[in-house]
Image 1 (cartoon, rainbow, N blue to C red):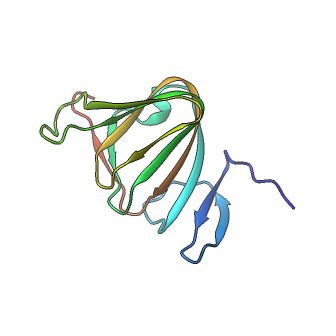
Image 2: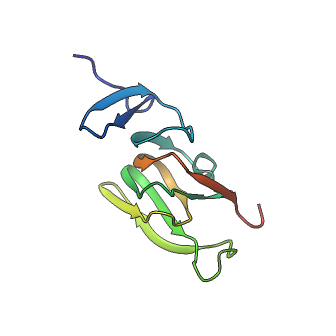
Length: 130
């Protein structure tokens, strides 16, 4: 048995219920579900300059330690640079980002987060004013 380092590895969840461990990478060609654990010290680690959208599935953002805020971009005004505050997440809480919704994350304090997502088809868009 070998323990898996959550911060340098990621899990790939297969359609038949199989789980593979791989070296962590963020690549738009990753098909299927991935589980990634990240340490974020500040907003700079959470790409605050960009909105992100996952067209291939919802995303689950779980906070293991620290505190983050998740924002969804206002649907009626997609160029609003501040977006809409959705949730403040603290240890033991999570938020499900709906499929296809533009979102971003800010870091309130150094945090460990675990993200379940379908990375294929992810789009990034620079926020206004950055």
